[in-house]
Amino acid sequence: MAIAKNLDNINESVHTALTRRHKDVIGTGCAVKLVAVTKNQDAALVREAIDAGAWSIGENRVQEALIKAKILERKPEWHLIGHLQTNKVQQAVPQFDLIHSVDSERLVLEIDRVAGKIGKRQDVLIQVNAAGEDTKFGVAPGDLKELVRITSVLENVRLCGLMTIAPYYDDAEAARPVFKEMYQLFMELKAVSLPNTSIEWLSMGMTNDFIVAVEEGSNLIRVGTGIFGSRD
Image (cartoon, rainbow, N blue to C red; front, side, top):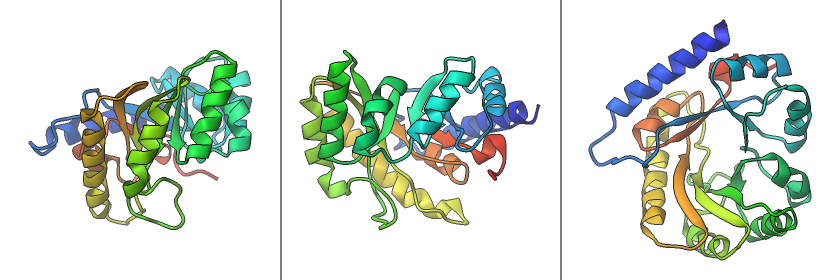
């Protein structure tokens, strides 16, 4: 019951945030999608969340997703939101509908190779380290265009947008400049005609800051604690 109520509260918060968008944020062209982050959550709780309407499941680790997929008795949409090592691509590509964390030429080339072997067009987002944090993965904003160019010519990968993880602040308002910058990068990318792309998703915002992220143009939020409570 708590999970269903939490999902209702998040959806209400998203709706309110959409009404507060500045007139310059024209929107990203899609309704806001909620990805339920299930890292370290018991499969029974994940099943409960899916049954309550959280159909998009986000995992940080490939192996944890593979284990849960076998026992959930559900077939949700799977999102990889954590860093992906090239030696895990072989396992990740068959499992995930959308990979949020492409951050290098080496990684995207390996995704393309593996996807080609199984006859799949893998949807991906490029992760941008918009705040320049040393502890975060992601391409620097100044290097984004080159990685976009490389990705757009690959036949077995479809670039669908951008992702970022903002710094954690006690006051989520402090993250607003990061989200504003990401929105501008997204809109610039969306305005360019490129092959093998379908630019529709701007993935930003987590439990602590998703309201501000939605206000600034996010249409894909990643929420774990807000749904399940604090992890052990």
